[in-house]
Length: 241
Image 1: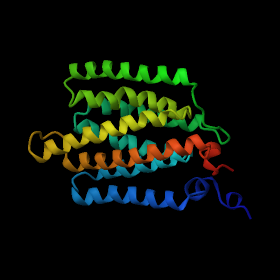
Image 2: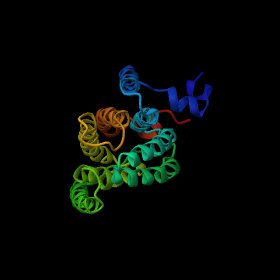
Image 3: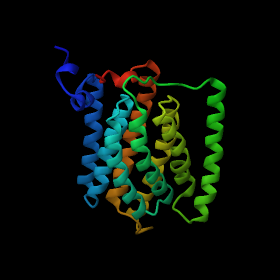
């Protein structure tokens, strides 16, 4: 009997059609989040954000709607972490993420394939993202946010990437690579500032959990670029009924 017919939607989404390599790297990424919590156990909500965020983007890499279930959990937790860290760009972005999760759930149909832009359109998309980053940098500087040049990437570029993601355009992963790389530096700098006593804003555990999360998501973004380009993410990665 076909496994997909034998089990329900939730089982199919969670457990079917996984490659051994994918199972291994997902396990490692989740364990890294838990390990960071035990290293600096001052923010369990940071760990929840990290684990849920990892699962959200991993299932997104597979093209599965269940991604948005983990996404809503991660966004709510991350909103709190961003607020206590005075990461106002991240805070505003996470509010947008919360709103976008049910929209993405609605738009990702069982039979929907991934899409890609024409070369010229893709070029203008990346130019527009760069201009938006400069504007966001200026606005966040006026609000006296921490590290506005990095936070702006997380703010404006993430909005563009998330819109492309819920519309299933492959180019979203290229933008996420930029966002994840910038966020590793952003949360890493904030972690160092706390360790050396340069700031008392936020907590070390929450910041380190975000460094680990962004490193995990960066790896996933590179891998997802390959998966979506090959068509493996079409039809919910083979998990649709």
